[in-house]
Amino acid sequence: MIRPTTCPICQHVAPQASVNTYFPFCSERCKLVDFSRWWDGKYQIVDHLDEDRLLELQERTDSNSQHDSGDAEEY
Ligand SMILES: [Zn+2]
Image 1 (cartoon, protein in one colour):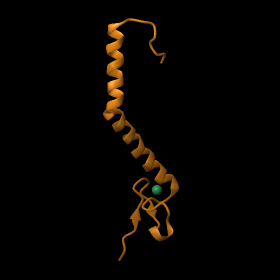
Image 2 (cartoon, protein in one colour):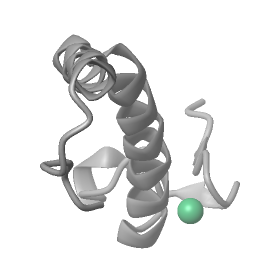
Image 3 (cartoon, helix red, strand yellow):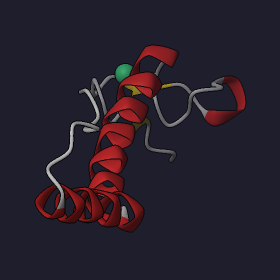
Image 4 (cartoon, helix red, strand yellow):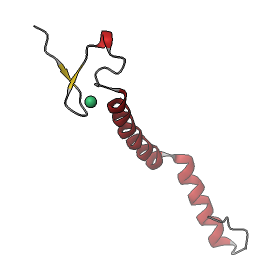
């Protein structure tokens, strides 16, 4: 006997993959909800581990302390 797959987002029964483009989710909405959650997490990870950005911030801090000129970027 095949156990019905429940949508991990809303816990409703999801249709089989053969008839459901959004399997294992029950609908496009739930798939998008899951995707946006995953995407938010990924953005946070990338932001933390982006070495180029860290170096850029570091260089900016160094140059600011060396010469106090007026060419600072506007935020
Ligand atoms: Zn759902």
